[in-house]
Length: 142
Image: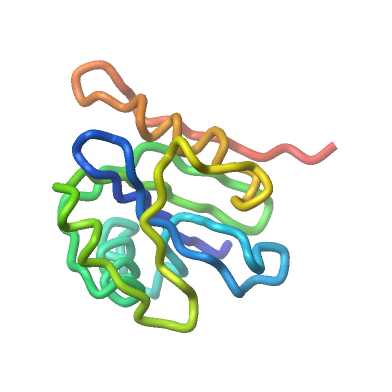
């Protein structure tokens, strides 16, 4: 099973989010997604999230919270979110060939994001440490 991480960095007012305009894989080309990638051997999902975000944006975020995982037959994706002051969002920059963008969550449209962002971002925004439990989602093929 291949494991991945994906994170959404929000400002403390939950208006803006850091996303990345994907070039790979082909089905994501040109679309916005959370920042993330493969978990390397020996890494925990949290460690991979910290590393991937730093590698792709140049900003070291240590306050990630896992809120769900999505599992299919051959993969598992661990999803994280974090809140930081707005000025930290604007410190992010593209460190790879994929463009890092700070986007208003109110301006996101389905045609410019990967399909599952329409529920992953609201789910992340609904998390509250006092009432939320970790979600686990399993993809079932027909």
